[in-house]
Image 1 (cartoon, helix red, strand yellow):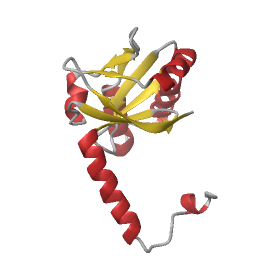
Image 2 (cartoon, one colour):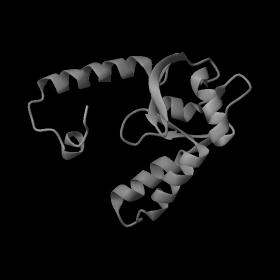
Image 3 (cartoon, helix red, strand yellow):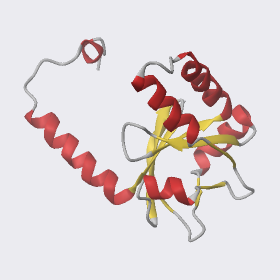
Image 4 (spheres, helix red, strand yellow):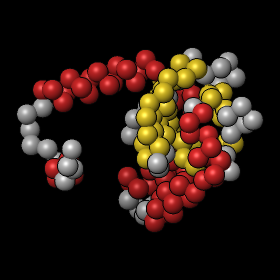
Length: 152
């Protein structure tokens, strides 16, 4: 569904223009209604079309409050979930608290991740990407079963 990487500017008000190649799809899928939340695994944000978020929210609801990781996932993802709407120029407003969490500066990277987007600070993304590529180059361990199942 969503794939690719784009570098974007974040304006002084915290608005980010979603790349034009995704806008029509987001309008068809969700009438431009999106949910922005923090990624509890990395210092980045996740941006979901509303129907995709509703599936995630259902899965979160099934997690037990008596399981610490499940409870934390719900607290983080639902607690910071923010409704946003594409404006007439295809922008979304990223609240200050979420920009701060992801250390978003003036330049961001948006990565298509199938059912959602990841939004990263550009500098932070480039540094992590290089670290990950270095790790992959050094890794001589056996790939996980999930990776083995891929036919590349």
